Every structure is written in C-alpha cells, then in structure tokens.
Image (cartoon, rainbow, N blue to C red; front, side, top):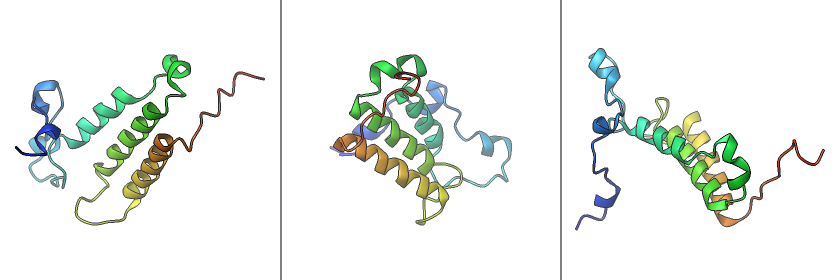
Length: 122
C-alpha cells in the first residue's frame, strides 16, 4: 500500500469548488506554478477552516493544538504561494513560512500561552 495514499484528496479539487489552473486556462503564456494545480487554493481552504473566528475566539484561544494547527496551515499557504519556489531554498515566502511553523510548534510544545484579551481587565 502506498504510504502517501491517505494524503491524496479523494475528490479532485475541481469537484469541490477549487479553481484549478485558472491563470493558465485564461492565458496559455502565464508562467506555470512549480506546485501541483490547486495546491494554493487547497492550502487556503484548509487555513480558512482552521482559523479561529472572532466570535469563537474566547472559546478556542487556549487550545494549544488548535492554535498550532492554525499557524501550521498558514505556513503552508506561504510555502505554496506564488512567490515561493518549489525548487530552491530561501526567499521571503519561505522565511514567513518558517516563522509561522516555529510559532505553530511553540504552541504544540506548550511554550506559548494566550496573553488574554486586551479589552478585558482594563
């Protein structure tokens, strides 16, 4: 059994409303992304799903795995962004991705603690 099979989407991105290859479809001369079609859109969809919304903030702000997942998903968005290379290290997008990953890991390790809501306690 392929160990990466579980990581592959069962439903193609185009069938779940993710625009795949739009730039190339509209402009054949557009540069091809080094990432698989739909990667950026799927990463953004995952991040939107994991982000703690404002009205849920107080209920979830102290959940360290949730905060870690939110930051790690944000790092993935940066990593597969249009300004990030899949072929070489470096660049601002990768620096941003590393910073978000480090913050996500700090949440998972318990090194970070929610500072509290600035509007309370005043």
